[in-house]
Amino acid sequence: MQRLSGLDASFLYLETAAQPLHVCSILELDASTMPGGYAFDRFRDLLAERIRAMPEFRERIADNRFNLDHPVWVDDKDFDVDRHLHRIGLPSPGGRRELADICGHIASLPLDRTRPLWEMWVIENVGGPGDGTAQEGVRIAVMTKVHHAAVDGVTGANLMSKLCTTEPDAPAPEPVDGPGGGSDLEIAVSGAVRFAARPLKLVNVVPNTLTTVIDTVKRARTGMTMAPPFVAPRTAFNANVTGHRNVAFAQLDLEDIKTVKNHFGVKVNDVVMALVSGVLRTFLLNRGELPNNSLVAMVPVSVHEKSDRPGRNQVSGMFARLETNIEDPAERLKAIAEANSVAKQHSSAIAATLLQDWTQFAAPAVFGTAMRVYASSRLSGARPVHNLVVSNVPGPQGRLYMLGCEVKAMYPLGPIFHGSGLNMTVMSLSGNLDVGIVSCPELLPDLWDMADDFDVALAELLAATR
Image (tube, rainbow, N blue to C red):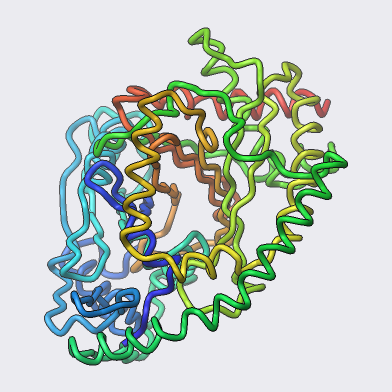
């Protein structure tokens, strides 16, 4: 058995009916490339074959009342792929709105914690009769759901990469054994041992924390810090969320992104942040709700290469100003790039494992209590920690095939939280930048204006390069 890290387990502890904490993706596939032709049964058999080499798909959570530490991953002895793979048909005309509606509904459904924490939905009739956007060949969509306890952005992308190949008829890899099982007694005893050792580990965490605080104070005196929490202005999407989800998506040409990047001498992520900023500025202006102060995004930062801690979530966070108070797109991009440079320096000075180390000591009750207090503070008008989450996940380049079907798009969809009811995640894939947007319909009933404005925001930046 494998023990969850505190950060992994925190996503279990923070989850509620209104705040399901799984991450999703919508893949648009050309199924005409599948060897032998597309059939759902063939798709299922290929998936089952690949899962034999991917133990992460066959592991479930195990815990008991005598376990003083975090839960563990164990093999699901009753694993059956048919409990996780579902098939559904898209209503006519089978366009992007119908696809988004059904994916929003699927994203609202909680995962069954008695089984491995993932689902996959094959959605047929995509681009049906009457939809002028239909591409040649047989099109299907696949929506994946994996609990955040099992993946972060990088491990999630790696997991999808293992399901995909660079050739449509690539052979399946050799089977791989899982972590095995663990009795209630074994889970409890090993948990007690780890719990008893926590004070010894705390000795190493406190100095890193003090160093971080002192460094931040010094940086603040010279204005060289990232945006602090709780300074973000309140917007329509900074309220408590419900259990409902709605989604939208967009696809941009990565070469256009690079043209802007090269012209202004900035990073791809700076351009992504500028696009998000332009979209949100337009959205809030049209509603007459643009704040005078800049919106603030929380940007997850991968620490996989810097961390030696166990766990599947290896992430820190950076607060980034979106400079939505600046009207000119080019000036806004320059200001974002400058602010990001300072924020990255500040983020890099913070110990990469600090978040992982502190969550290791927190008990489930602490997370639950903290979430209830924060949710109630939202009702009393407290300022949000940040306005939204913006994540940039690098994906593989070149042609990619999922179980023989060519991948045309992969829209990533992250979780939303009380007080931060909007998530925009982008993934670079095969020469494109795929954008996934998630919210809850009670806060933002229609996300398509935002999705469509990504093209407008990019056109504005491209115009500034000429």
